[in-house]
Image (tube, rainbow, N blue to C red; front, side):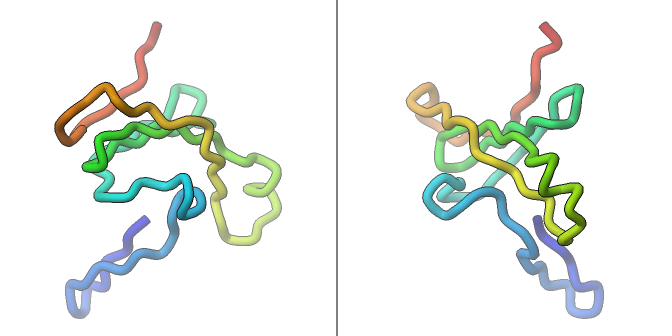
Length: 90
């Protein structure tokens, strides 16, 4: 998650998904929540898509973080950057 400081126009990373061992290794271009809002899919310049699930218990703890647990990585299907991702209704 990035935040823009309007004063100087710089962007700062304020929160990341997952640990460094399971996060994307390059720019994330798109994300989409499922209809229920408890899962998230991301796609990246690293040629992968990752599926994440909300940690509802930790979200309710009120510690200021929205923790997302990495469920799986989809790789080996694309040989170019993935720019867009969306959940199917079916």
